[in-house]
Length: 249
View 1: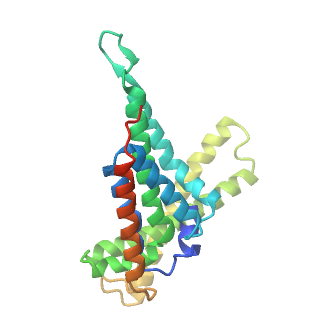
View 2: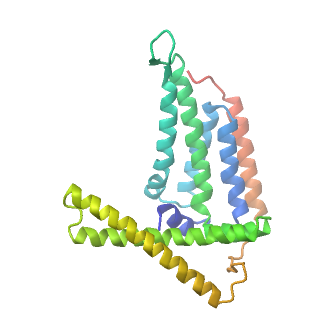
View 3: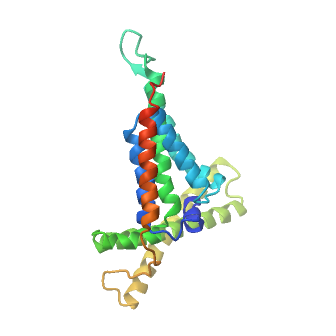
C-alpha cells in the first residue's frame, strides 16, 4: 500500500464525511491559488502542514514521502522562470525578475499541492468513490475507477514480488542481466494483469453483476460544526493575508 493510502486509512479524521474534509482541503487549495503568494501561500502552507501533522495525525515522515513528488514538480516548474530565451543578453540568460516570479510560483504551487494532499491523506478512495454516485457521477464511471484503483495495487504488488524473485536469482548483477530482467518483468506483469482481469470478470459474472458494483460505505454524516470551523479558518486566513500583504522582494 502506498504511504498516502496508509495514512488515509489510519488518520484521526478517517471517519469524517468526505464533504467535511473537502471543504477544508480544497478550500485551502483555492486560497493558495487566489491569495497573494506572500503571505497568503505561506499561511496556507503552514496551516495545512499543522492540520495534517496535528489534528489529522499524519506522521511527518509519511507526509514527506508523498509530498516530495509534487514538490519536485513545483521546483522544476519554478526553475524555468529563472531564465529567458532570446533577447540582448544572449540565447539563454537570467531573467531580470526571474527569482521573484519563481519564488511566487513555488509558494503557490507547493501550498496548493499540500492543500490537495490534506484531502487525499484523510480520505480513503473507498469512502469517496461510492459517494460520487449520489453526487451525480454516472455509476459506470465510478465502477471503472473502483476497479482500476483495486487493480493498481494488485499490479504493484505483483511487480514487487517479481522484482524480489529476480533479485534473489541474481537478475540484477550486470547491466545486461538488468535489462533482461526488466523485459521479463514487463512481460510477466502484462500476462498477470490480463489473467487477474479475466478472473475478476468471471467472479463478477458468477455473482450476478448487472453493471453496478454495490459496496458498503461507512456511515458518516456531514458535521456542521466542523464545516463551520473550516469556513471560519479559511475566512481568517483570507483576512490575515490581505492585511499582511507585502511585495515579495
